[in-house]
Length: 123
Image (cartoon, rainbow, N blue to C red; front, side):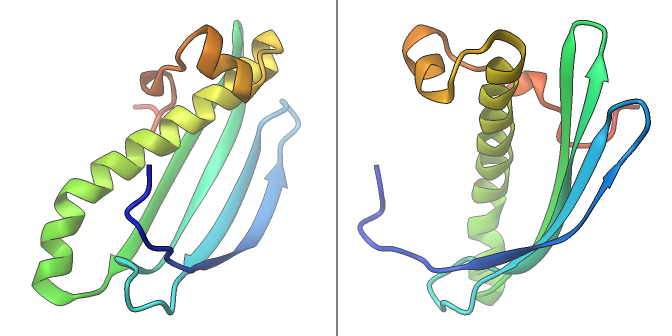
């Protein structure tokens, strides 16, 4: 379900790092020059960490908005939704890696759980 219009944006890798224990971290930058886009620019990372019973995904990002106070108000509802959608998509990837359930199959067979993906480093 879309909003009836497209918003253009771009992104690029800012680097990757792999560690000896099998974890990997990727950093990215993203931006949009499209005046309809809430997000002006931002950056973030995702990290894959092997754990005893599978893989843990950790992701964190931040971004600047446009449209002044109106953009900040919209972002108050948008940011949590974007965080949930990001975590949900990583859980689909987890199901694929741990159980060979493709992202398409996971929609039909079982729903991924966004709560399994951390949206910041564990405490």
